[in-house]
Image 1: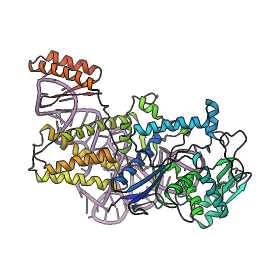
Image 2 (image 1 turned 180 degrees about the vertical axis):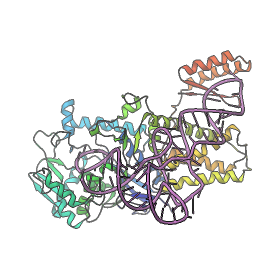
Image 3 (image 1 turned 90 degrees about the vertical axis):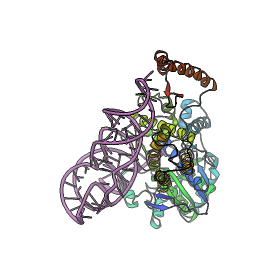
Image 4 (image 1 turned 30 degrees about the vertical axis):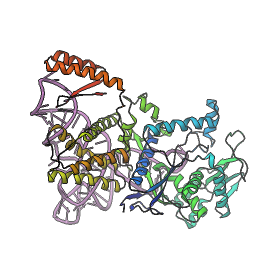
Length: 494
RNA sequence: GGUCGGGUGGCCGAGUGGCUAGGCAGAGCUCUGCAAAAGCUCGUACAGCGGUUCGAAUCCGCUCUCGACCUCCA
C-alpha cells in the first residue's frame, strides 16, 4: 500500500494520497498558453508534474494525465483593453491565428521533449472543446449562478459565496474582495467586480469567434479547464496541478464553476508549484525578465554566461522542493551542471561494478538504509531535493569501490544489485534524467582510440612529451583525457 | 492597503525540538610521471530581540527584511 503524502493546497496540510478509484489516478495540469514562446518559468510545473506522473506510475497506479493547450484567446495584453492576444499578435506577424498557435505549440513540445517529460495521456485544446464549454455555461445559468449581459455571460460570485466557501483555496475573503471592488472602477457589465466571465461577446474585429446561444464570442477565462477536466477525468478527480500564480483567480473560479455545474467540488488534491525567480523577482511576462527556452539552451541571452543543457535545467529544478521558490543564477545552474555530471558518472561507474558475495554487514546495512530513504523522501510530498541529496550520499561509496578505497567484495552481490536498481529507478524512471553526454559517433570513438593507443605506448616508453602533447592538444578544444588507475584511458567532451 | 509565504554557512538549497542534509566553490592531504578524476579531512550556518524548555536554528511574541497573490501570468 503506497504511503504517498501530498501537500494539498486546499486544506494546507499534507494528506495521504488515496485515489477515488483504487489503482487509478486522474491528474490534470494547467498547460501552456500558446500565444508565445515558453520560458524557464514554464519549465517548472511541467517538470514537477512529470515527476508526479512518473512517481504515481512507479507506485503502480494507472494514471490518466491530462494537460491542456490554451489556444483560444481570452487574454489581455498589458495596457490594452481585453482583447484576443492570439489574434492581436497574429495581425502583427501576419499569420493566421491557428498558424501562430501551432508554431508555439510545436515549440512547446520541442522543449518538453528535450526536458524528457513524458507526454500526457490527453492534451486537449480549448478551441477543440467550445461545445463542452458552452454546455457547461448553460448548466451554470440554469442553476441560477450566471447572468447574461450584452452577449457576455458572467458567473455570480457573490451569490455563490453566500452558500459556498469561495476563496478558500487561495485564502481570500469574499468581503475583502467586494470591498476593494467599490473603490475601483468596475467593469459596468458585471454585477460585482468579483464576478468573472464565462463567455465574452466578441467585438467585430475579433478573429477568433464562435457561435453561442448568446451571440458570437469566445469562452471566458477559466471555463476550459473545468469543461475539459470533467470530460476526461470526471466530475471529481484526484489531482489538479499548476503554478501557484494560478491559485487565484483561475483555480478558485474553476472550483466555483464546477461546484455549481456538478453539485460538488471537482478536485480532491490541489498541488501548486512555486515560482522561479530571477534576482528575487518572479520570472514572468509582466516583469519582462523571462529567459526563453531557446535562449536558455543556446546561451543567447544577456543574462546567460553559457548555454545550459535541458537535463541540467531539469536537475536544477529537481534539486529544490517544488513548493519553494527557486532563484535563477548562472552560479546555481553551473553548480547543477557539475553536480549532475558527477552523479551521472557515478551511475555509469555503478553499472560496471561487480562484487564477490561475502559482504560486510555494516556497509550493506548502510547502503540498504540509504536506498530505503529514497522512498521516504518521495512519499513526503515529493521531496526530490532530498532524493538527490540521498543519491549523492551513495556516490562516494560507488567511486570508492571503483577506486579501491573500499575493498572488492565489501558489498554483497545482493546489495549491489539493489543499489543498481535504485539508481536506475530513481535517476531515470522517477527523476527522468538522462545522460548529458551526447552519444559519440562510432567514428569519433575509433579515432579517439587511435590517439589513446599512441599515448599509451608513449607512456610505456616514459615519453612524457608526446603523452602530454596529445592530452593538452585535445584539451585545448574540450576533449579531456582521463588516465584511470588500471592503466586504461577514457575521454569526455566538455 | 488586504491575504499568504519566506529569511539557513562564499553561492544554491533540504531538514529537524537534542543525534548539527546534499551540491557547487575554497583549503589541506592521499593517489598519480604530471594533470584530470576519485577518495579522505576541514569551515560548526540557520535575519534580529525577547520568551517557553533541561535543551531551539526548529515552538510562541515582537521587530527588521524579501517575495507572491489581489489584473494576463507556470
